[in-house]
Length: 149
Image 1 (cartoon, rainbow, N blue to C red):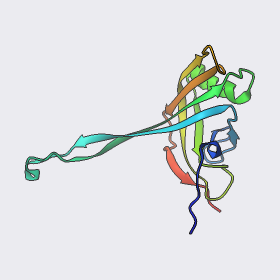
Image 2: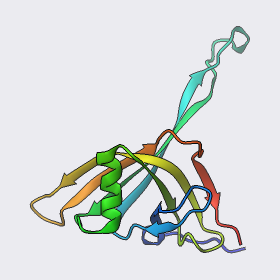
Image 3: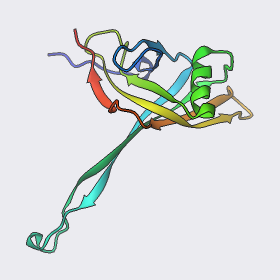
């Protein structure tokens, strides 16, 4: 059994121009560093039977996407992200470890809203936009997935 080695450049970020049930995934080629964030609430569940050692269980989970995009204000993907931010509208995102059309590709998808859209233009290097998105009110539950054969 071989293990697939994954390097950062192979990872992809997409947004959906279709519906949740029938997605039409569009790559976001202007994305740079992609991070899928995950955090689970730590809930104390200690009772008198546990003695002097506290016990914990998992509570609610937060997931989100943080990434940079190149400063390309005429690009359709840039405009879609900006529209979610300025219009307080949802956009479904998917971050994958490869091409979303290839069987075996793993990823996470969620209907999100863009909550941060911040430009950075340092003295050196390319100007970019820092983007943060998190799940918003939707009947679609954020999920981890594997593309089927």
